Length: 261
Image (cartoon, rainbow, N blue to C red):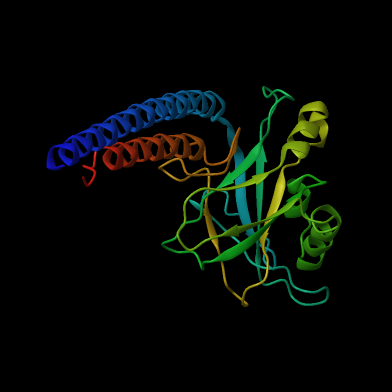
């Protein structure tokens, strides 16, 4: 009787061992497939991101202007922005202007406006309105009076809803807004390319978010980029590979655990 029980225990132990081995082999095969799939996806997505992500052009002109005095800060390293005041109120605020040469750009592909705040001096978080300009800024500076400049802005910047409103976080870094239709319009109709206007949305009086200008020595000024945050896709792909490897290790560890007799 004891001999028979001993045989059954050996057989049961052997069967459990075989099942564990088969499970381990299956888990290993599935894990390797997951790794191969994730690795392939990572390569494809990373290559796509690296091939598409590029600065298409940088600003050829940018400035801010204190509207009341009509000052032109074209040589400054930041673009200081304020919020427009109601008609009839003295315009004690700053508005920004940015222009790009898009003559060598193609109509294909997306175009994102790239702006970066100076977290050392800006009031953050902030929101910035981005609007198409319908007139030459030379006429703004030639207006000769605060009412004249206010009237020019009303006609050439504030007359249409902004293209986008960009929320700028206190953490800084590059921020993006899709302006593809406007840039493509400039490409098709170069005479309409007067650039864009920028101003603060909301906030308190005299809050002044500051963006790096084209004069920034580290090259953090306004640009048009083909895709926002070009490293995001590649980082997500690497995370997928890591997840697949973790799953493989966990399954292999569970399958290798000794079974109770």
